[in-house]
Length: 349
Image 1 (cartoon, helix red, strand yellow):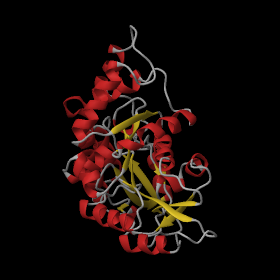
Image 2 (cartoon, one colour):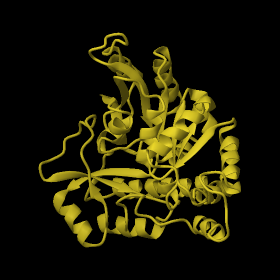
Image 3 (tube, helix red, strand yellow):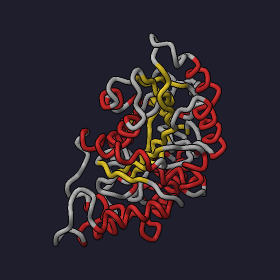
């Protein structure tokens, strides 16, 4: 019963097979091989336009380099208060953008509102040198609390950003989970809504180690190549990231694995909602479930082999949590089985 993180899951067998198929022989290095070019074309297909794709090793690298591509001296980037870049990236965005700052924006359950974003940006007058100037906006899709921005939400956020000529970045560590939750297309969820750059994640959804930065303005590709190299993210044997994405995107495996992970979260949420030992904090939309339970229950479940984390309560969550209670996060993945979800359900019935 492993619900700690989708990072705990291994690799999908078809992705492992794809890696093995490219493990022997010779191929040109640094992103110039046939498989690299093939995957680049595949990204063009799924986004329905020409894009510039840069492979990196981690989601943190994808996020920070995405901001660095639009970096400005004295720059300030705006994102939700619980965004991964603000909470869990150890100052990497500030470091790799040369000292820019991150500004928290409030909103219910992981999603900032256009009104709050407008208010936050308005705090910084572009020509007032003392405070710095707006640089970028970032949304997390799916969010850190398992919710999803609707297409209308994204469009409204983009409208605020475009009014100030600010680029809009999407942290898509769980891009596929959000995509299948909305039952839409990559194009509709990104550039057609006003997104300029995407951190496209594969690692959480069945890959070994595969992340990418997708730029919709291909004129920025040349400069971005230098940014990636300077950040030590240019892999010599990049064909092994390409091989993962090749298998991941083939025959819509990435959508299949995301649908399964989301379905397991929905199944888990049903069990928690019916439980007499804990309560569902809110309805999940992707593959993360949050619940409130007595601390003694958490320990008892951990002792029975259920693996999950206690979690900081989101600022927007206002339901009372007792002093002897805690909020916990459960994450499902392509490797989660209905049997382990049901086994957990039996423990909390």
